[in-house]
Every structure is written in C-alpha cells, then in structure tokens.
Length: 140
Image 1: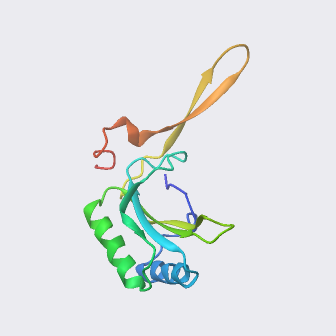
Image 2: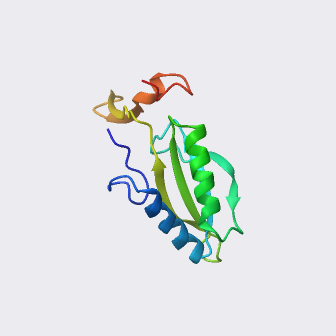
C-alpha cells in the first residue's frame, strides 16, 4: 500500500530534479524549508522527527538537496518529507509538504471495527508498521 500524504502523493515518486524545482519554488516565495523523517506515517502523526533545523535563510537549493540526501542515507527505511513554511503575517503555516523518500516495503493500514454502546460502531485506523518496534518497522 502506498502512503498518500502531502502534495504530489498520488503521483509517481519525484525525481531529484523535480524535487529541486519544488525547493526552488519554495525559496523563490521566501518560505523556510525543513526536512523531516518518520517510521510511523499514520495520518494523524503530525510530529515527524526533524532533520536538523528549518533552513530560514537559505537561498541555494543545493544546500537543501544535500540535507535531503543525508537524511535518506541516514534513514533508508523511513519516510522523508520536505516542508515549506510561509512565515509571512496572515499565513504562518506550511504551504508545501511532500514525501521525497519512502521505504521499499510499505505495509499500510487496516481499519478496525469497534462495536460500542448501543448500536454505535467506531472505526480505528491501525498502522501495520507499528506491530514492529520503532526502528524495525520497515525492514524486510
């Protein structure tokens, strides 16, 4: 199952050249770029680990591409994403976020049905990856 989160998530994986063009776009708009990674991409997990600090004053996309590549090498079995933060008054939010690396094997999610009080049925999303301990979730 392919995780679909963020911009471009329904497209084929972006090439490094395509990633660089998106980073250039973010920098042209004066957005701060950051790199994050996780081995728990649950849709409600908005707290991914940050790779270094956000790059507020960087103007050259080569520096960001270097950090993306370093994160990919350090965490080959994790998801890696790029965020572009607009700090301008009135926005102050992530304007662009997309996955730039994913593990070779993506076990996906299951929908667990829970019957509760009365005739109420609740559904819970369960990540199959979390059946394994942290750090071992995407190894074959």
